Image (cartoon, rainbow, N blue to C red; front, side, top):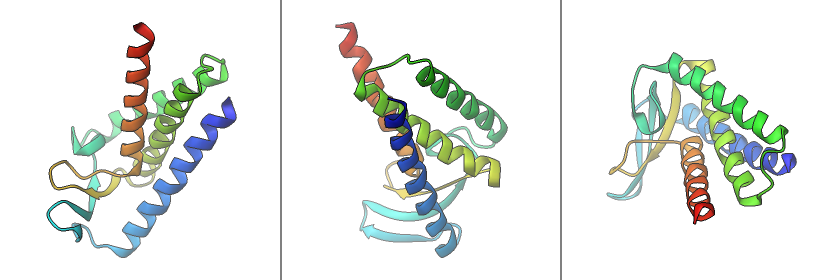
Length: 146
C-alpha cells in the first residue's frame, strides 16, 4: 500500500518539477501564451501565498504547514491507517502536490504557477493534485458516512 502512495506522489512531483522547470527556463515573469483563446493560457507567475494565489506573503507559514501535512500523511500511511485504494491514491496526490510546492518554497521562497484559466487564479500541477486529492477524500468520507 505504501508503494501505491509513493508511486502516485512521485509521479506528481516529477511532472510538477518538470513543468515548472520548463516554464521557468523558457518564460519571462508575467509572460503569457494563449492556448485556447479567452479560456486557457500558460502564464508564468511567482506565488508567495497558498494554492491559487491566496494569502500572499505568508511563505513561512505555508512552508511549515506543508511540512507538517507531509509528515502527517507519511506517518498515517506508515502506520497502516488506510487500506482503501481510492483513499491511498488521494493521499498520494496530496502528498505529491505538497512536496512539489514545498520544494519551490524552500528553494525560492515562492511557488511557480502557470496554469491560467482566466476565471481562476493561476495555479500549477501540485495545486491541482492537492485539490483533486482533497475532493476525492471529501467524496469518500461523505460516502462512508452514509
